[in-house]
Structure formats: structure tokens, C-alpha cells
Length: 193
Image (cartoon, rainbow, N blue to C red; front, side, top):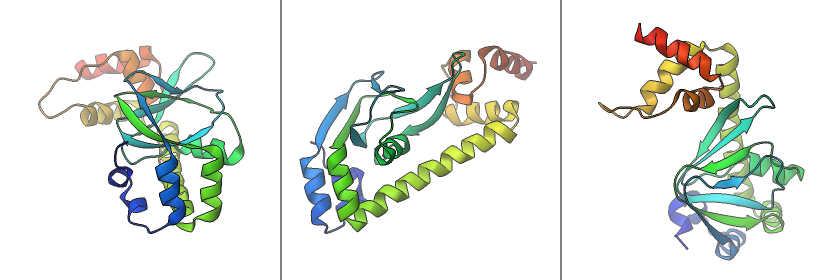
């Protein structure tokens, strides 16, 4: 198992017996790139802490349109997983590994015990939850109030490495921005003009 203290230094610095026991008893999950970590409607049985790699969390409407809600990387935990564990609910979205991923899997019962018996772990969970919830609210505001052409331009700039070419499809851009492929194609044609 990779050293969890490197990915989660805020937990590793604490001298908390509950956290140390929890982390050392957690299982390790390895997922290759493009693997479904969880599906919409799946039961949530583990609290995942990402040690390395990246997962994108996305949702799909009945009409087939998709949007990326957020991404997880090393040192992250999933706000939807936390929400599902707290509410004993099923996943409302899906997670797909974008790269090879290594994560700690903490069973729901051990997670609940740690939240109840370790103030530092509880603070970590709620701090992470709050941070990701804030980014979800920012996404909703951006989609609701932001102009799509400006959002697309910002995404293209941020996703393109310096002096490089961005390799993507119109559909992938539409998924990132919560739009339709046809709309993205029209905006890109406008940019070209």
C-alpha cells in the first residue's frame, strides 16, 4: 500500500488512534484508466480516499446529455460518496477513472465509527465535503448564469498545455460543459470565423 500519509498529510500529522487504525485497516483498490468506479444507482459501501490518479464524476440525463460535475485527484475524497454514506443513499452519478487510480477503501461501518469517535477525522470529512460542495455550487452558477461561449473559451485555454495542441472531440467538450455537441460545434465554428 502506498503511504497514505503522503496523500493525506493533514490526517497523517495527527496523533489519533482511530485514524491510524482506520487507515491501516483500509483496503487498497487499483483501477486501470477508463474503469467505472461507481455507477448511477449503485449502493455506496466504501469511503474512497484517492492516493494517486484521477477520477471524473459525471451525471447523465434521461435524454443522454452528460456533464462532468468534478474531478478527484490524489488527496481527494468524493462528496457524493460522503453524501451517500451519510444518507444511506445510492449514487446519483457515476465515477470513471481517467488514469490508473489507487485508492483506500474504508468500509461504511468503519467510516461511520471513525466519524463518530474521531473529531479530527470528522473535521477532515466535513472540510472535504464543504470544499467539493462549494465547487458544485460554483458549477451550477456557471451553467445557469454564465455564457457558454465564454465558458468554452476558458475551458479550451485551461485544458491546453502551453504551445500545445488540445486533442479532444466536440462531444467531450459538450460533456465537460453540460451542453449539446451541436451547440459546441457551432460555437467552435464561430471562434474559427
